[in-house]
Image 1 (cartoon, rainbow over the protein chains, first blue to last red):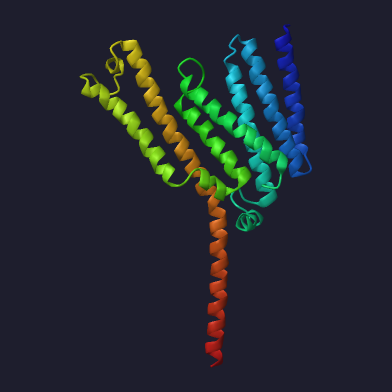
Image 2 (cartoon, rainbow over the protein chains, first blue to last red; image 1 turned 90 degrees about the horizontal axis):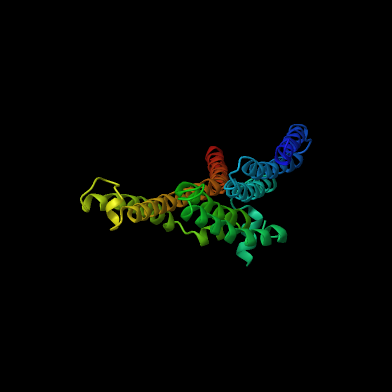
Length: 98
Length: 164
């Protein structure tokens, strides 16, 4: 069994653990953290699978997944905190004072 | 969100990287994974990140509403005119072989222009969708507040009339 195949299996185990945390998570923030972890694991899995399959172009997709994962997490957290993706009352007040 | 210095600094570092990656996906799409649609979405996600972190007002300042129509129509027109150029030069619609003296170079040029049109349209549509949906809740809340105020005013008026 090659190193890459073994790392893919290890990533699968980590996926299961992260999904368990996302399903059990008592607070929404546990779930957000778990989903973020799943995204990071997906980045790693895509990169490892690219080399496993002999197609390193998969690195582009992994890079893109990392960028989108970050933006998605920020958006979800903002929605939890302020209840909207647009301008919330506090920020508009601050904009006016500036 | 403007108060969180970590998110602000990370976003400022990320936004140019996302845009550069979008251009890479756009113009390297012939050789690797990617193309116009994906590049447009990635390019729009940079503006979405900007609007999420720095607020919708500043996001609209960076991407004014008139860019939407310019981007959407400009992309479609670029696609269409690249296709019509083949007809003008005596071949079928979207035949790129005649765009240059060498058919292979013509194909390259045609694909590049068409994909750029697709990317432009998709980026503008994605930014427009996000701004529309993100700006909707504040608008609705404002409406419901004024509605409640009007209802209160009209209720007090009718109460006065009843008293009279």
